[in-house]
Amino acid sequence: MDGCYDLCHSGHFNAIRQASNAVHTLCIGPNSDEQVLRYKGPTILTGPERTEIVSALKWGDVVIPDTPYETTIETLDKFNCQYYIHGDDPVMCDGVNVCIVLQEMNRFKEIRRTTGISTTDLTGRLLKLIQTNEGQEEEKEESDRVAER
Image (cartoon, rainbow, N blue to C red; front, side, top):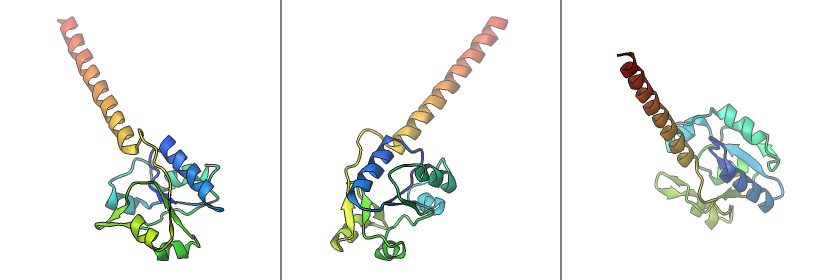
């Protein structure tokens, strides 16, 4: 099972837990910084930080850092993995859904995606908090200037 695993949250943990129940030995592969940047955009945590987080989880047996974003049969074979496990959302690489390609070759297992939480939502919340905080600081500075007059 690969992934970005940036700002790990309950959705990530639920996916990894489900994946561990689907196979005998679970390999977790945090994607490389370069691959994530190419396909999804910049990360907040570095590759080594994301790898350290998933290494601490009880559900994984092996952690393979810096995996490619596009999982292929060659990637699975290289790491001696029988299946690619992913949520019920597509993994698009250059217009191709990797999950469908691997499913057609009987090398894919699907798990349920956790609804209601995503890294994109979390970063949006963080940005909103920063903007709110900046607005409050500006209001306080203006209030302080008025009080000094």
